[in-house]
Length: 102
Image (cartoon, rainbow, N blue to C red; front, side, top):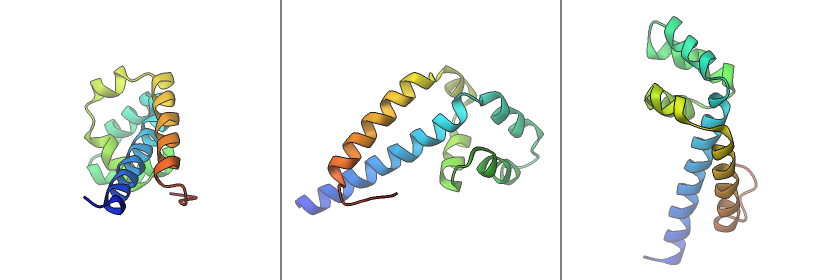
């Protein structure tokens, strides 16, 4: 594998990890609001249309969150997620130093 290809794959991986963790951090401390939105929504589309602006996340992040089982969401700890997020940011800056904003 070429070095450039490896760098692109690492950049893509860390970019997804960053987005995933941002979504989890946005919801984990307010999970009851997230669950309430799910309960009152009739369709997945309704959930997404409510969750995206409510938590200020992207469509991709909303779809990721909807794929989680509620027991997974309940077990997450904000502090652990924050540490993992900071670690991913450091690696992302190493792998893609020229990327200013995702």
